[in-house]
Length: 415
Image 1 (spheres, helix red, strand yellow):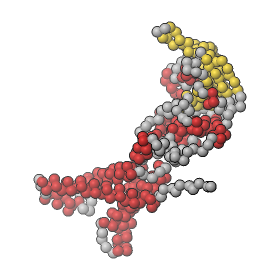
Image 2 (cartoon, helix red, strand yellow):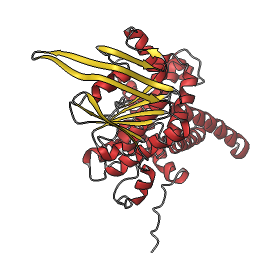
Image 3 (cartoon, one colour):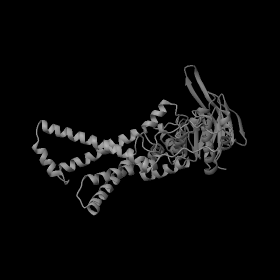
């Protein structure tokens, strides 16, 4: 097999007030392409220092480090950054996700640094999220995801550039036993099926047992390097009792007030939802006009608007169910209704002022006749009208939601 990592006589020293601290001492280590290696050691053993050097984040004081045949120690900071972006995917204990962006946008980030186009970024990010089992969570923000799901997003972000190696720094440190095994099972599957080299840093020996090779550090030196059959994380996961029914489907604890608040708010709404509402509204207006002419044989404004409201709501509800993985919360419906109403007003207002709408002339003529308090009263009535329209949209969304995308019924337990 091809050698991916080669450390020869590697040493790292740090200057401190008490003198020189030797964090690594004459490390000789080779890792071949496709291996799953765990680096184990207590705090201060040197494993984190080695991880920084392997990740091209630091240089050794002495010795040589080669990654895929490149001499890392001889390269500049910019050159190391390029190699880091091309060859390494990082997985951190704290996930390091951007809190106000969706899972999809978080995963796209390394491709932004690489200069990939928007369409290519989206395609690769969707594939990476599907590979870690989050195809239905692409538009969720981190606060809408459980800890295990957030770590899966972090793994997808590490995978999206197609690196030959993943460096995982305590990836299960913030997770419970079940979720830790789920993450380890995913890493094992990626290692087996894709041949990705995985270097996992941990201080827990039961976590390290899931690797096929365990390298133990102490006082900056390698004290053991053992290859043995790894523990199958997926098999261990099956041995655990089923999760408690009180845990919410999205992984957030139902008893956690903060999690309940996040679930109530629902997070940001994708902009594409508004575009789908606009298409639905336009179709509804066209159908309403056709219905008035062909069926009722009347001229009406209210009926096409009602058609438009209903089709807007259907488009929003279907988009949320398909692309956000859950129905819109009450808070999201309120924000959508208000933002969409204001958006429509910002579009129609200038068109009306320019005289391009059918109602422009009579409306502008009427406004010209008003002055002083009467004009202020008319403007106030317009603001009240916008609020009424937004409320109407909210009510239609609330009424249409259970009809178009009813909530799933709880499964009955088999006796």
